[in-house]
Amino acid sequence: MVYTVVMTTTVMNVKVDADLKNQAQTLAKQLGLPLSAVVSGFLRSFVAAGEITFRVDPPLRPEVEAELLALHRQAQAGQWDEFSPAFERVDDAMAWLKDAVETAE
Image (cartoon, helix red, strand yellow):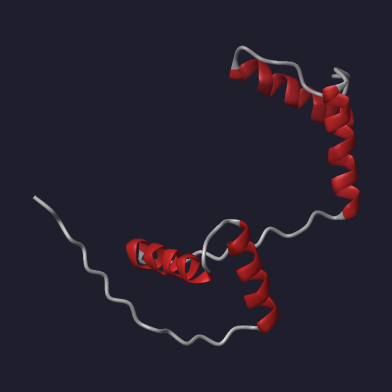
């Protein structure tokens, strides 16, 4: 038995910023996809979920990024002085946090 799926397509004209279109085409090409496949995928997701989510992760402030990188380097080097210990029980963690807050004040 042979099943055949017939998909009809249509042309959709959408106005978008030219630079955004070029960036999207470049990224899609890097992923080996035509831009139409990306748009179709977004539309399918929108229809299936009945909702749309726009997510734009804001860049970190330079001082926050620098602090996170410094902490990451400390962790990689095994310098754990600035980090909390591991806890077996929630009560122990809460007591440690309470003490840390009181000490900081």
